[in-house]
Length: 119
Image (tube, rainbow, N blue to C red):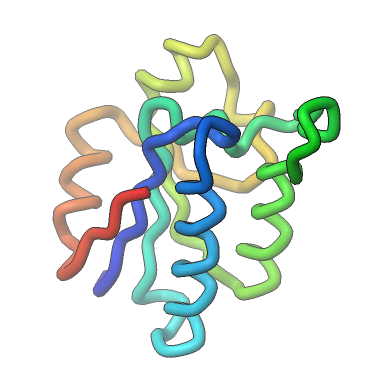
């Protein structure tokens, strides 16, 4: 994996998630999708939850990013098992097919990337 994008912020507190998604999609135009890894850590997994009510706060639903990632064939998406437990979520509650890794393996996989971009 050449580039890892790690999303660590909640979806609606700032524009970081949207900016990260824009950068990710731009990068996918220059890299093979197999060279890109997407990691959702801590508050970052909240961007993937289904059933968001973003319109109530006049925002766009960040769970829709899963459609874009699938459209761009970005399949290497990872979440940390401890974060799912912290937020009492299951893999099925997420809008994107992800690989669930324990904390140690999550960071082993992350640090295999040549470049890491954090949003």
